[in-house]
Image (cartoon, rainbow, N blue to C red; front, top):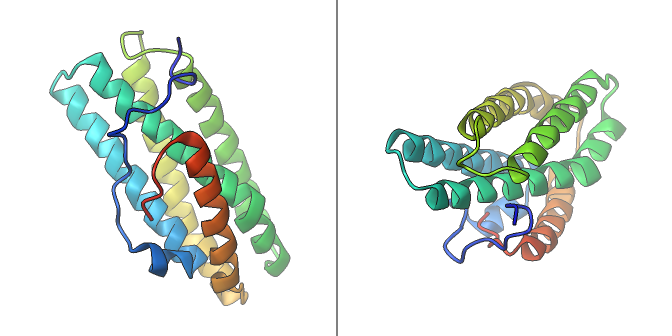
Length: 178
């Protein structure tokens, strides 16, 4: 059985970095809180690798990372990026984000089809973390600023994002933490 078919352990929860109410009212706050939660999970995975933790411990965190990144990418692609395209004159930042998502999804598929005991598993998680870190930096330092300047209704988009995220998180069995 692969990680993609396993249901997440009951203890697999994302770190909470913002109150649900505050994040749900603003697209930028919700997405930024997701970024922080995933970054914390990558750090947690790195600590497990350094501590030579069991495959089961690493699998639990890897599964949670993959699910959270997948949900986050989906809400961005379905809601945030189309809203950004509507207000931005230049589409380059959104185009780059789409391509970065495609690369991350490919790596997630590889991770979900493998196991912590497989060669390169830890390296795949590390590289996924590096992809995500680069993507986050571009979104937070460029795209978010541009959509705010262009007048995106971050409250309305945030409500849509929060509702869709809650649906998707429930479908994965993970708790919505932000």
